Length: 102
Image (cartoon, rainbow, N blue to C red):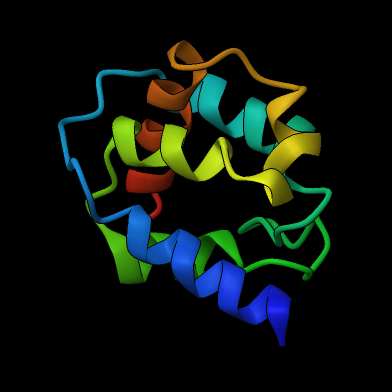
């Protein structure tokens, strides 16, 4: 239940600070595979369904903004993923990838 509430809160934060993504979606996809798939299902079917699937995040929260994604990644439950990325720079690539899923 706690995870579901945290995930819902994280998704709500993604709608704050929407901005145009100027990152590289190919780099964002690589980052997602390396850092996010440990908890999220990716569109290619890889990953683990602990958190919301990337397809659902992209569909429900588009367009995403890098500032909001940084806030989400700074939450404690994202510590394993945060250790794999450099913020805020990589957030632009992840946002470009997520926004490209729609």
